[in-house]
Amino acid sequence: MRADTSESRESIRELLGDVRERAARFLESLPERRVNAARGADDLAQALGDALPRRGRPASEVLEQLDKIGSQGTVASAGPRYFGFVTGGAVPASLAANWLAAAWDQNAFSEASSPIGAGVESVALRWVLELLDLPETSGAAFVTGATMANFAALAAARRSVLLAHGWDVDRTGLHGGPEITLVAGEQAHATLFKAFGMLGLGRERAIRVPVDGQGRMRVDALPNIAGPAIVCTQVGDVNTGAFDPVGAICDAAKQEGAWVHVDGAFGLWARASPQLGAPVEGIERADSWATDAHKWLNVPYDSGLAIVRDADALRRAMSLQAAYLPERAGREPFDYTPESSRRARGLEIWAAIASLGRDGLAELVERCCRHAQRFAEGLRGAGCEVLNDVVLNQVLVSFGDDRTTSEVIRRVQRDGTCWCGGTLWGGRTAMRISVSSWATTSDDVERSLAAILNVVRDVARKRG
Ligand SMILES: *Cc1c(COP(=O)(O)O)cnc(C)c1O
Image 1 (cartoon, rainbow, N blue to C red):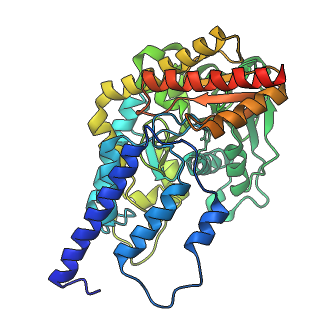
Image 2: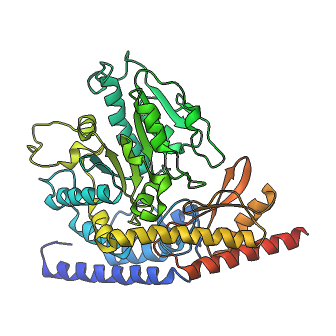
Image 3: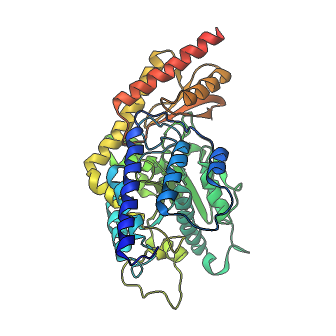
């Protein structure tokens, strides 16, 4: 296919028209289709992959095959009744922006490669900082998700706490340098320890701080800190939704010169709501924050943000030099990110916030929390045991002994009305309900509750 003929221009128009129809059909099917996927990965791999094709086929054929086979392997996580992990859908403006961005195919690494890529990040960052009430001079990296956001923020932390003790880690690495005291809660997210590992700090070296019954770090149990130290807190426990007392931890740890980091993959967005008040207070006193736009802001995968109070610390940990690189004029994205070439994620964040506005995002967050309350109330009303204080968008529920709960989870997933995952909480098996999507309505909550309670009754009948 030659890109410069009018014939090929016609066919790209047809191809994109075709994909628009296919995508719209998919999205329109979401409210009524089963939430679980119809086919598994091995089966799909077989269907898609014979021998490596020697000759190519027309793009329209490739697309048709992908849609026919691929859509059967999708989980309806973009739909209104997916409550697994902490997922979120994509608000329409952000999905549309993602399509346009793919057509633009901009390399957002610098202003020279994409003025819009660099420019939109600056606006998106300013808006996010204002929404989350974080210091307006913070530096930030637009990355794939909270794992990389934790990594980037902690790279700045590592640099900063070592430099304060006379050690330049960027130049000479960790070899022979002072030890960093790492502190994290017993319930810190697994990806935090992966970030420690990638930073050469070791996955297993952190001092783990005991937590209360909701998974919150106990301030009275913080270890003594001396020398270079990084204290990692969490807002939004993946099980309970609970927040560490970040303000109080800052008061204790920063006095000793420690860097306080916040993993707020989904919980940080609670700061967009004025209603959620007390538990989110004090978070602005930390030194760095990691969050996911693909969770509660509801932009398409993948999209995370590392935010660092000392913009220079992040810039020095991440920037690079080469003769062919442009002179810095304004904010250059590649000065802040682990990656160099990358897609323009700022576009979707900008579009989501532009379409929702401050009030719309607050409403989205509050609505998810109300839905979680209703789930808890409906389940308790039917005699099920809710294991957590439902303070945010997360509900943990047990249906009796572990075997029964596991059986209920399996059947809820198979039933297909909604999808919820399992977890362990306080040594017990529990079902997790995470309400994170803009698309979930009260009706979806009632339908899901009815489906779950049907399964519960059915399991009880068979046991009895
Ligand atoms: C989801 C989550 C992460 C990991 O985020 P990714 O976007 O999957 O990298 C880290 N921490 C917490 C608290 C999370 O909820």
